[in-house]
Structure formats: C-alpha cells, structure tokens
Length: 451
Image (cartoon, rainbow, N blue to C red):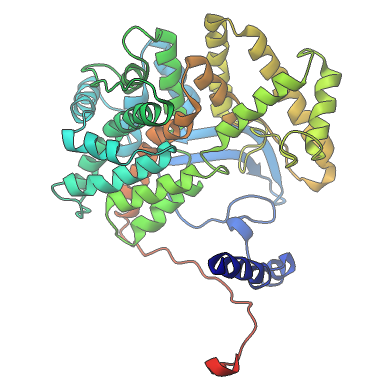
C-alpha cells in the first residue's frame, strides 16, 4: 500500500513539474516535434538515400500542395514498382540492394545478393531456443530482444567498417522474417494453445514468399499474395531520414554504438502507435465502421458517422480518423496509391469487392469531412496514407494483427541500415545533440530535516 501511495503522490506531482505551456515554445521559438510552423520538418541533416515530397515552395515562400513523391536513391518509387511489374517479377531484394548501394544491380549482382539473403535466413538452433525463451504477446518486443541477442553471435559486432556494416545488413534483412514468423508461432502456441509450427525457410525463393511460407505453410498462399506482400515491403523500405524510427537509428549511430543496439532502438520507436503501430488502429477502426454503418453505400450515413467521430462522440472518442493525414504528403501518398492498385486485384481474388468499395468510399468521405471539420485551422490538404490500405491487404492475405507492425520492421530494416551506413561514413560526422531550453524555476537546497 505504501508503494501505491508513493506512486500516486509522485504521479500527481508530475502533473505540475512536467507541464510546459505551449506559449513557452512560441516564446523561445522552439520547434515542437521538430516541426516548423507550416508543418514541414526542421532540416537537421543531409542524405542521399530517399526523398519524401508532398509540397513545393513558391517564390513568395508559401507552400503549394503537389501529388506525393517517394524517391529511392533518386528513382521514383512509382517508376520502380511499375518497371518491375512490367517485367513480371518481384522487387524487394532489388530495392534493398538499391537503398544500400546507391544503384540498381546488374542481373548477376542481384542473383548474388538474393543468394546471400537466402543463405542467411535460417536461424541457429541456439537462436531458435532464445526466441522460445523470450516468448511474449508483442512481436516487436520479441524482435528487439532477439536483435540485441544477435550481438552475441556476431563474430565482429562492434566494427563500423563499411564491409562489416554491409555484412550485418544482409544478415539482419534476411533474419527479420524468420524471427517474426517464429515469434508469432511461439506466441500462438504458448498463449493460444495452438500447434507449434517452425518451418525452415525455403531456398531460392523471395523474402515475401518465404515469410508467407513460414507463416502459413506450403500451398497456403497465392501468387498474388506474394506479389502484394513484396509490394508492401518495397513501399515501406525507407521514408527518408526524418521519420521517427530512422532518426532514432541515426541518432544512436552517430554515437557509434553497435548495430544491434541501434536497430533495437529503431524497433522501439517503430512499435509506437503514432508510428508503425498505426496500421493496426486503422484495421480496428474499419471493423468498427463496418459494424456500425448499416448501408456501406450511403454517403449521408457515412458522413454523419465520420463527423461524430471527429466530434469525439463515437468509437474511441479521440477525434481521429486513422489512416487519414500525413506529416509530409498532402494531395496523395504515393505508397497508398500503389498499394491501392493491387489491393483491388486482391479484393477480387478473395471475394472482398464489397469491403474494398466501402474502403474507397470511406477514404473519399474521410478526407472531405476532415477538411470540412478543420476548416481554416489547418493550412494544408490531407490524404489517405499507406496505413489506410496496408491493414486491409494484410487482413485479406490472412495474416494476424500481431505481425502487422513487425512486417513494417521487416521492410524498414533496409532503410535503417542504409541510413546507419550513411551516418557512419560522413566525412565530417558529428554526434547528434540538439539543444533543450530549461524553463524550470530555480530552487534553493533545503537540508533533509527541514523539508
């Protein structure tokens, strides 16, 4: 009881001691969340890896909304995806090579790189046992703990030479799908009382197919499922150096800590519901809307319910419509556009045309109602982000919600390692250390007996 009272007392005190009024941020010109007044990010670094574009500045300094663009090493992701699709092949491995190296591989280089990934996918018996021992209900926590444990298996874990960083990159990219699949099956066995399935990854197949095989088993997935999962991995592979988890990796890398500590930090960031955990919130919201909107084609009924959500009257009463809006993209999120194209095909294959049509209408009405509700209080247009469709895709494929965010990590490990390599190879590198203004009141020390 004493502990509970102490915790309560301290928590009540923190209400005051941790409060910093918004006016102080304005007084000292502090960029909250590293955001400028126009919602653009504060420029804190330089990179050659990826570019995220949602607006352009006019001569008068004002921002003009434009259709979103995502560039990997200067190549438009839309061109990358459509190019691979026109050649009827998968592309995540090629995307990983591009982001790590800076150029598209030749056929021979791609074959060697893919072979290296396949070779590195299996886990040692000891690693499997460690996952079994670190069982948990959240796959992201298991993933982070397993990554930290990988330090002990690395022959040279502390080295930050380019060669060693590339070797570690290949190993991490290859092993993430295996770790996630095994972690889920152990969770399924220990928490849900289901049979335990530990499938050895196949040789000479893509990472996307291997993951579906390890999750679902032989002949339990279609070619289209492999293609759309591969697309999702491509689209989530990187998103510039400013996204929260990648910035976390860059901050920790600037201190020259080991790869496993840095990547574990990135996993911790990505786990947050305001970052990688957002797609789960979208799925849960959509299930609620499907159950509470009787006519999925009635625009008036949909608009009325969305307005009630914005007014914090229904659902979880946060006033949010999950999957709508992005920190950078304005008119469109290119990842959502590309995923939506193939999601329509998947809906037809799975007989989910009605659900998909409802999802499209929700996207349209959510954007409209959000803009109407915010009015002049928001100075930029909003759009559906990639989370709006990724949850639908993963659900249609038959993947459990427990692996949605780990899937994000499976892809983003590519970008994390690319940015870590870049951060450690600057010719004028410096540890990242921003400043904080202290606005606390001065206190005099009092002897213990006088307090």
